[in-house]
View 1 (spheres, protein in one colour):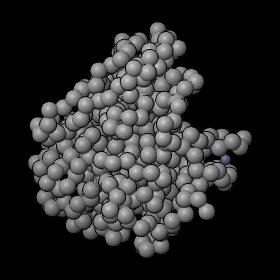
View 2 (spheres, helix red, strand yellow):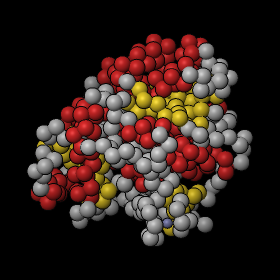
View 3 (cartoon, protein in one colour):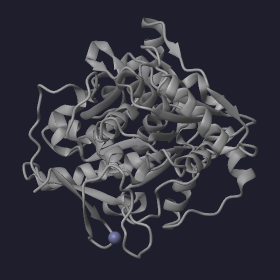
Length: 428
Ligand SMILES: [Zn+2]
């Protein structure tokens, strides 16, 4: 049996593992595929770099050097402040005193290494990634390091998110979406670009390598705790992290060494842009329609821009709605002020800065404690998806990625853009 296969959650069709396959061929409504691994029981390979210690549950055959990994540690000060007996922090980012060395500062590094290690070497087509910031920074850094061609598309207003400890390579072509374009405009341009010859899409939530990389936060937590946690808190934008956490839970159940437990997902969005929270609280599998102008106005008020995906993987078969149903999950809306207050508390009690999105997750935990949705004896994991960025900027002088092209979302000529990128790659 090969290392892994792809299984359609809707119809059960099976496919050979293939980094370019994002959908099932059968005629049914859209469904996610899921990896099924030959190694049901995880054998940790501690000698491999970073997250590759968990290579048994990654759809890759090769490893890439310099990979970071999530760390899980038991909180003392914050736990005491909240009156919790077993609060664990999954920290994704830079916190050298605790051994956290994810130098791009966010858990998007997990998916970048997992997706890129799965691609064939010297592939003739260029990967297209649309990002609000964190994903772009992770992919641009890893692609530069390993000389993998990348077309990265990001809203111009988020350019300051593209920094790295090491310099960027000419393999990375950055397109900035100007004239007030947002994350969804970047995604729309990415879809157009990835349909051209010589380009291909990463696939977002549909890419199993992305989800299986992200799910390693839960795998690392379970390996550290020696059990499946009772509760899991995370902020969500596309919903991918929540789906990945649930899929990791399923793998841990199949592993056979852990007690039967469905970890309750507690997922949060940054108000006023909270489409999944509104749908879930109304018991709706479909998101409520929202006009473009209204969506943009809400998005512009949100401090955690990485959470502002307008087309999340919520309704799709195998998507976030189902993960919430299976885990009897909860969703929370968190204001900018509540996120800011939570970030301040985290830094005070845990000694490291965290991002606005992580503040949203932490504020959801505060809401849950207040509303008694968790018991003080429960085992709780708080996923700090991004942290230590202020500390990175203090400890290192960082490089910033400059756009190759800036273009307005309404006036872009994708063939011309593609030509400029090809030219840039030939020069590299
Ligand atoms: Zn199918």
